[in-house]
Length: 164
Ligand code: FE
Image (tube, rainbow, N blue to C red; front, top):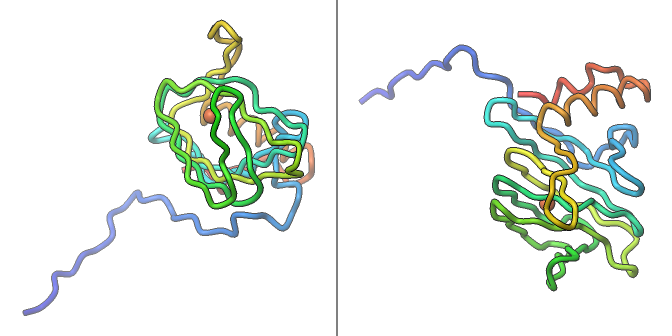
């Protein structure tokens, strides 16, 4: 019996394999005071992205709602949501169901946390009453990185390596 010959289809975008923690600090894109992210994948086909989120002691990731699911894995440090009583510790897995609203902070006894997040759809920023104050999706994230990488000398097209 001979194995069937399977040829690759055309149009497949290249895979991504990279060191998740970058050597070059400029790869981290500032998001807010003491909050930055390191892009890993911008998926323009399904509408979502993967990144590392890095939050230092006093950093706060503003209150937001997820219309689609999020999964995360804590690589370093610990963090929690103001709206919940659990703490995500180093090595923790986190699942955030669609509809979840939360505000991310780092406890005073933690200098820095780094967490991998796979985010579907968008992040909808909301006020205390749940009214929308802003949003991010894969395209606003790409634009944000493009502008930042141009400004820090990596070049606007540096972001293209993460786009699929
Ligand atoms: Fe979230």
